[in-house]
Image (cartoon, rainbow, N blue to C red; front, side, top):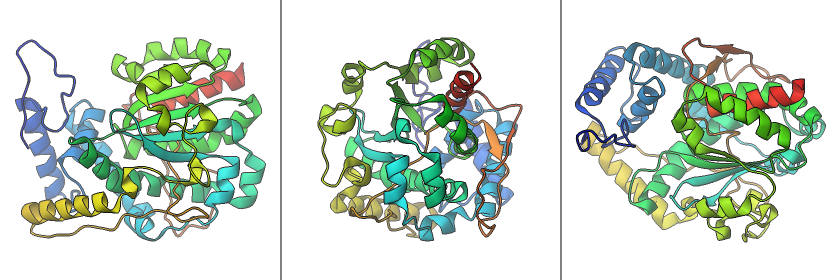
Length: 370
């Protein structure tokens, strides 16, 4: 991996990312990879240096802490059989779930990131309980992160001409009441913890729109607990959000239901619209990946993109939040475990920094408790 430290005295804003490593970071990456490989914790056919670097950045290049995080990550993957879920998990209830908790990927922002949208005001916990379970929603979340990393980001990177590692999230709070937050709180906590621990450093931009005054008030306090990089990624907007939002996302890529111009046939929520639908691009990326695997590992292993089906072709769900940094590790259960109606418990790690997921939950709890 090529690296550079940038001009003397000038901080590289991409420091710690592929192609932007100083000598110390490069040394730690190499040592990290070698130690994990020696202990059977690193498979070069599944993970690359960019993957390792996300965990190193999440722990500020502290090798012991990064190694502990990675070890827990691999243990979690094995316990939940994540690779098998990616290949075989089906979610036929998606169209019905979407009616009561819309969350979906839809096109890209001006920087080439996949856009992920949640409409929280539409949540109906009672209806969801009749359709699916928290256990299946968590498994769906795992699979969607895998699709995000394996299928969407590589295509977005090909289109942009450079590495794309993050998403742009829109969270719509219009019509959200305290009772809704309280009922979904347990699941969101477990989902946020799982995301933070196992898919760190994946948030690029985060917009909260139609935020009520209480949310804005609490945010003014919460942001003082975060590092400036994380704060810079998050914007809390009221009902007049579209002007700011359109500076980052073309209006043509924003669904009409939240003020944009896009009206996908069958609804944007189930369209899975984005460059990852271009089969010529997908083929090109797959061929490039196969070549890179062969050159690096002597194998041309690759995979077919996996997307769910519904009434609309290639419909897909999406993660709750693309969280940037690790937080707490949920107590994972084997995938064979009977489905639960409650989310796994969350045990917070003392070294875990505050993440965007924790920002969300802190604000939620503050609203509920007020």
